[in-house]
Image (cartoon, rainbow, N blue to C red):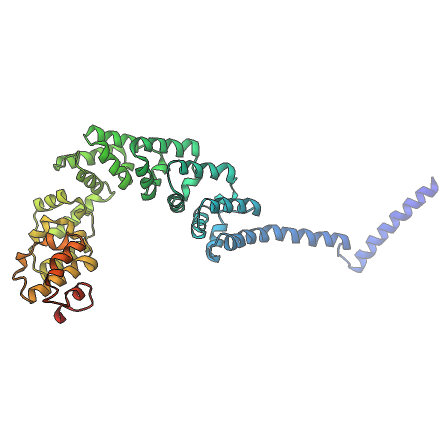
Length: 395
């Protein structure tokens, strides 16, 4: 026992002496093994905090096609834990026809897709949309432009909305709807505003064909709150539009924008500068509602050219308000250049002798036959004038 005590005491003394010696000598460094553990722990912590984001950024650049700046920004919204999971997501998208550009766009908009279980969450949605009759090309374009749809619940949002739409639209029009901007209806669902607004249209006497037209081409109009949408429908009816006519659809769309009143007032003032009365503005709207939705600048440019340079009366334009929306560069100026040449050459005596409608509204083939081919022997440069290759004065 004494020997055992002496042995322990000796070890304790040695230990105490050892510690005391290090203290006296000023050696405050931890033992070698402890120092190694500390360095390793700091190294691992650095890898966890720095290497993981770098992996995400590198993956976004190398596998998803994002720019370095875009990858850094996107990495703040997602942290990849498994390359295998992300790879399987990309493989599924490629197998369903998504291009590299579309995949990049999807990931940039909705990076959380990379951490989903593709077979469980993405594949059923892709298969469902395909079952609606959408081609791979249509489907990829739709989802690339509207990635939020892939984040919606298939059972609670996508399927109920699509079933509702299928009652309103043919299979072909449903595909058109998806391509033209239907996602806003998916985002909030159909039951909140769309279904009540369609019922308002039915009660107003609008046939299903016109309802389908509004739904396919102007779906945002049906997102408005029913009480506000009902006021628009009443206003359209009071203006004299017949709800069974397709032009009523354009009128509803024109008055459904959030700032439609201010646009109407500003455009009315522009038209009045050219001598139109309030009744003229209303009659133009009833002929072609879109004339009140274009910009003030566009209206001024068209009126300035046709009235001041071509000397057509402003009242004539009121009869054909669709002309205000035609392209100056591609249609109005080239066709008017031909008319100017024909006037200089004496084939047209006065501008009043030419119908503005016959110049501006026919398709190109008809215009060329009536105003170019007919005079090409007498004025060989006429086609070149129309094409912008020869100035009017040089023809």
